[in-house]
Image (cartoon, rainbow, N blue to C red; front, side, top):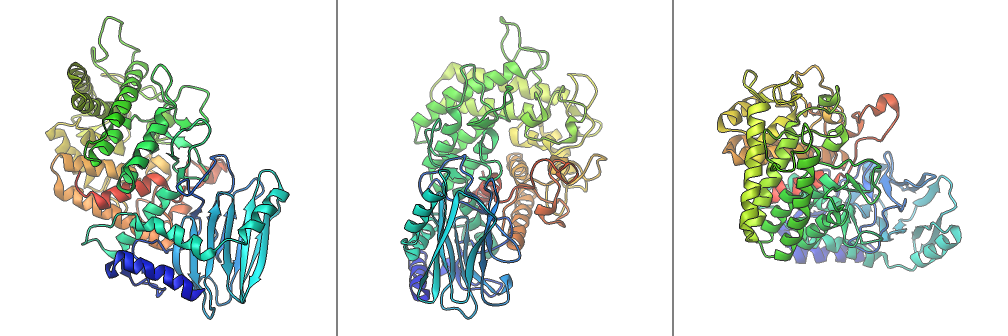
Length: 590
């Protein structure tokens, strides 16, 4: 097996050339620089919709265990596929591949490596070397583990079926006939299609980029009932569903891999639009009330269109038709004081907007919402201004001249209202506010920096904002704190202070937009380094991070879970983090 596996990896040398290979710092086997190989607890392990049929409701999704190699399947009755190997434990293994659907590790003193790989959405197969064993901890009637000896190694198949153990046994029996070598080569082939980082990129960033593409692959579903194209989720466990905002971020990373897949990720969201323009926060299952998510689709669709060199007019037409209705819905339904009179335009008066709930903003536990959501939200103004500008560009590209002018007027009105009403000149910062001239929502949050990304801020306002960004208020070891480090409401929990790579991404693009090249390069580099360092330490790409760079992400609180016991932990192998990491590496400048 070692020789056969070596031939599979040797093929990668021929394919990518010697530059694609690097030595693993921990002394492991040589591995392609564009193949992830860091094992850690909590890594998502799941079959991708890029490989074959998937179902979003299927519970056959696993996370890696700590202490020793294992796969914890999040079934109704949790089960762990446990590998016990000869040697001195996990630290003695030399991982060649730790992808989100494939594990390959050399075992000291063994002739064969450990392998675990998905053969289908409900079937994991693999092998353990001589002296090792595989077993299942936990009970369940819907899974079956079968094993057979093949020389000195043990081949195994672990299958799940919602129809029960008899069907699972048939699947496992077929799984024992699978060629492990062939499956490994098939799954490795994905990394042959991923773009390489720029030549001057350091090895840790290259390895993290490989991980990012693995995460993006893992979080793709195949078409299924009600969803007619390939689609994405922030995390196959525990969230599983499609997310409006996050799908926009996903498309940025996927566009580097496959423009068609990036467009599919957006088109899947479009399919859930109601007749009045509303798009729900999650799909296919939806909340009972009309709660949406930050409008980012026009911005994302235009970026995908640009990255494909503006070739797909049909996609642009489809995107424009859907998103223009969505933005109109937002401008009507979320305007403070209600929808403008019928005889007035949407940009009439002083257009300020507020979220229906904290969840709709995407910042669920931000202290901004401690007194409710009935305020003019600076981030919603930025999102809507950005969407209007993107729709203006779309209309111009589609030669809808009068519509382009309308979107220009709407963008200008929103930008002007935010500059005049939500800017606090004494503090030099944008704040939420209870009305055009009402009390300020006195919380310093990173939402203010979206005025750079969206173009809302004036040059003078931008200069003062950057002063706060680079000061001790927001400059932290892992940038950028979502609440200022010296704000009384700060805590390292979700949007109460934790650092989010997705927000960093938007701030970086904003700094570049206003000409703060040095500050943008610094924030980009520190973001890439921090995400890469925590990947090297934990094996995961995380939803958010400790702004002080001290606590492992898995140990942070998430919406008060440590106190209440409700909800779930910080998400590992989070698709939006993977997507923005890839775009920052591969597209340093916008």
